[in-house]
Amino acid sequence: MFVYITSAAQQPSRAKSCASMASRMLIKHISKRPHAPSMAVRSKTSSSQYVASRARDPTFEKLMDKYKNLVKVVAIQDLILANPNINPPSVSLEFLTRLSQKLHLNRGAASFLRKYPHIFHIFYDPSKSLPFCKLTDAAIEILLREAAAVEASMPLVVDRLVRLLSMSMSRSLPLRAIFRVWRELGLPDDFEDSVISENPHLFKLCDAHELNTHILKLVSSIPCNQFSAAIDDWRIMECCREDSNADRTEMRFSFKQGFPPGMRLSKNLRLKLRNGRNCHT
Image (cartoon, rainbow, N blue to C red):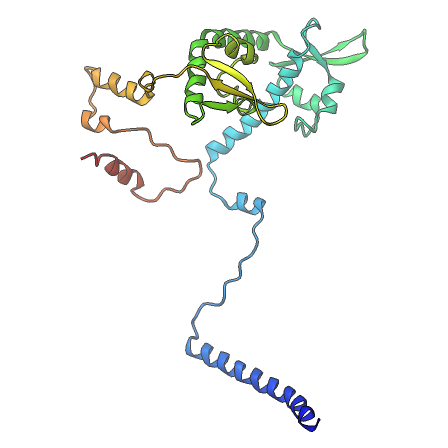
């Protein structure tokens, strides 16, 4: 019993001696390296801080601001054209006001519509005692031209969709993925009927394992030699020109260089890329 009491009494003194020894070792280590950097503490960075600290491209930022407004205009335009039975096609201002938050109209629907008088026209319907919005004649004419251009480019649209499916290992893609980029691909609004259904020898819709999802498959096998890159066609055209002053050897291996907006390029980076591109031997 006496031994146990003695060891317990010695524990605080041992702890103090260990602490003093550790402090002396730390002071000795710091005195040997007075200019050593302190321990780095990693701080959390929020997404807003990261976006604020990144390098900005003024031209790209201006383009994105205009593109955001274009997306809103197209969304309202689709809502108006979704009522073909109404003559002229229109939508009530009250309905757009209820959708202001979903359409990201920060100052309300009326304020946004008045910013584009050449696209939208606000009028009052006395029979319903409500203000309505319709497209102007100039906007309708532009829509008709767009529809005619899409109709004329239908073979290119089919070829573009075939190329997209050929890039997949399974030669198929979920239909919802194509719906996300149908406007960027130049597909018409009813591309399921006008493109997929009209070309059953190329495309086929199949049920997927997920609910409410379809898979678009490429039916016929397309030979690889049928596709040609646009850069190869450009090289042939440039080489066949009589007034072309470009070096044909360099043009043979040249390609367009594109860099993301805001990317900080080091000095002589483009020159190094060109020299590396020309190392074809």
